[in-house]
Length: 345
Image 1 (cartoon, helix red, strand yellow):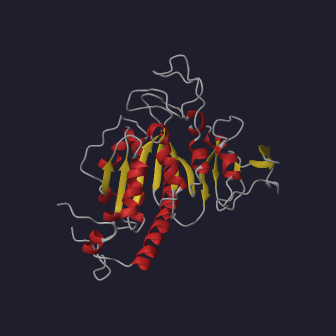
Image 2 (cartoon, one colour):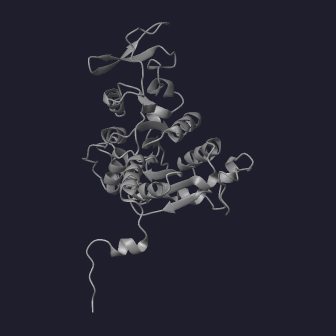
Image 3 (cartoon, helix red, strand yellow):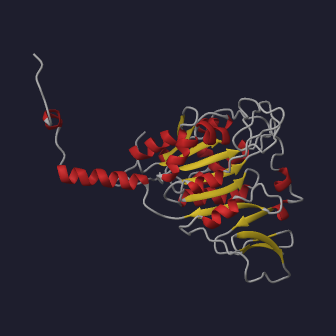
């Protein structure tokens, strides 16, 4: 394939979803939420203005890991939990690439937990899509790090005794510069979050609630069902008061450091929480991230944090450039003859 250069600009027609669809049969269980996420990604990528050959998708192990086979871009199906490490290497080698990691809650948060944390804290310019169905789907229904307390599964027949891990709190604790949450069946919202992540330069972590209709069906039904979602979900929007409800007459405010739900008439009270994504402090995102298991509050979705700063690639390549400028660029013979050398007779 002949890649375009500055001297030979692209003359390709506008990309479409079809350009990102492979000839591989999509093999997830009928009704799996992964189909909706795949459709969203295939619709968003053509809108980003990025040449198709500059996309890379890296996956680990699990149902979600089939993603690279279904996207007509470069891809790596790697080993369990190591997708963020492989993706870091890919982007370090070629910072011009748009590198996306696709992982499940087990792959990302169990064996891959440390790899995820360090990619986020370093602010590596990769986008991590974590499909959260609160179960191990590929291995047939064991409890995962995000399974609820007392959850009965094949590995916890009497109920899980583990406190569930909060993925957004983990990402915020690792100082990820972009943190968001969306839901598989909320297509317009999911697409907007994906576009925001693509526009962000730095570590991006997107938790996507995804239904596993075989081993954990309706895990999020109490929040996402059409008849209740207006009252059970609040969409966070930068610069806007945190308002929700079918009548748009409920909101969240802070009582000290404690969030509380308030009801109002036509005019929202002045002390309602106004959402901001660009604060360097993670206090408010942490507070909102903790509401996911609290039935007294709606489930927050949207962008929790979006701040700019130097990326890991910036710092490393800047360090290398400075050393090259200081020491010069010796040839291979000079390198081989440098330092201590000896002859073997």
